[in-house]
Image (cartoon, rainbow, N blue to C red; front, side, top):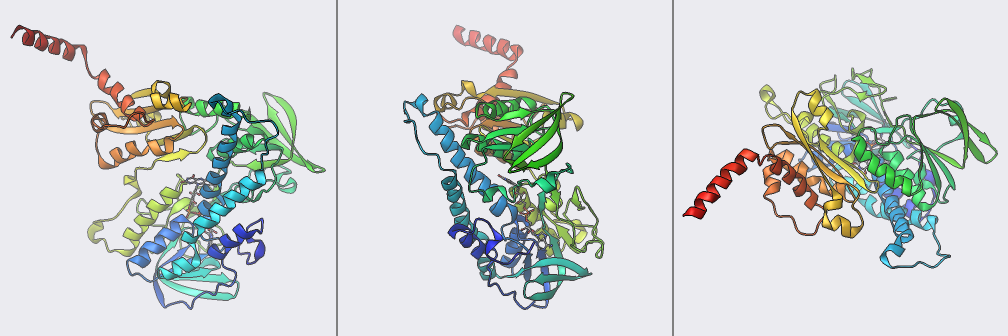
Length: 519
Ligand SMILES: Cc1cc2nc3c(=O)[nH]c(=O)nc-3n(C[C@H](O)[C@H](O)[C@H](O)COP(=O)(O)OP(=O)(O)OC[C@H]3O[C@@H](n4cnc5c(N)ncnc54)[C@H](O)[C@@H]3O)c2cc1C
């Protein structure tokens, strides 16, 4: 919502003031609309920012509308603050196991959650200049602060604090993102709860924190808060965390989270929430029994709901669904051929890098002619890796074994454990593995999963290979520096190589060597 004013991002300290000065300047005056725009973009998260900046750099006339904070979720309430917190929580966890490295921390050491959060806010403010309204204006984008809404075919109204403006467009891009989905649990609204939109404003540690949902956001936050010293209880309807990932990969992360102190309530169902004085009480069912849990706060991380409301989509014939968002084809065109969409609003893989890649597709398809469909970009050709930044991290690219089976692709699967990788052992980070799926009869890698401290970095080797259409043999022939954890990528490929070194090949070689000895 557009909330001009001091308290746009809490707490109202110097860091958040610097952030807001960049991403929602209080004295911002919207420009006079400049005739018909080549493209008007609604929403200045990653998808909208990238769409706008590329279009402007190509010489197009561009308007960008943001009702809240430029930078969207990623900068303000997503990737950036969460990774800042995760880093601090890791430092705290390292201190607790320092004795293993011969460092004996005396009792009475001070843990300062407020300072850890201030560090996060300082770094977020530092990064925010990249997404600032002034920077985008300098880059040639007309930045409008206000709510954007389609008012007719070819027009969008910006409802800003200083009045409304009507922008006309040849093409439009809907990049309005998503927000935390709220479960319809009785009493939750009245009791109050945290989401990603409020948790990064905390300045005091909740001593008892319930987390509802063991997806990436729930797991990253549950582990971090447990490391900060909260008693964290994680409610999940399924039987393990991170349901998208391979069960054995998720189990490794689960075991570490358990060591960090997270308590899991799997196959549980929260039925009701109520407030008792300053405390919050969760009523839940587990194994046929009804229980209650008293906590100081509740974090809800059960998924994302697309921001489709109030955009006037019906008026311009853009079809959408409240759960899956705006309907697009592979070229990211909506059911109105002049209107495109990108990012969380229309795509199931909700990541910053996906939003970025989609923005580039929108530019190519919306701004350039495509005689006979030539040169049209498509989401079908995207190779999309992702990572969950728990410790250890889980990263994945391409297909899981099940996806390959569903598509009728026969694969061979190989897994190499990190406890046989020297660097992982020396780092004390040897819980994990690399797994590859190779199409039978070829050396084509169709999917890979890595569980490792730096899995998010290590997965890139497989992504490049898949993007370039190169096979596993390339990794086998690539020298990896010793000792690095990324050696696991080569070691897992070597398993495939060894499996294809058949007894018949060996018998032939033995004959050759025997012949050479006779010479
Ligand atoms: C806690 C958390 C951690 C995450 N961590 C990662 C991570 O580590 N890596 C990763 O890749 N992804 C991560 N993500 C996901 C990532 O943040 C999103 O995928 C990404 O921000 C999507 O970008 P977007 O541009 O589609 O939408 P958003 O960033 O949501 O931007 C949409 C913008 O549109 C604006 N808007 C909406 N409606 C209107 C309107 N009518 N008028 C004007 N403006 C409007 C909104 O205010 C918002 O600023 C995380 C998400 C969360 C919640």
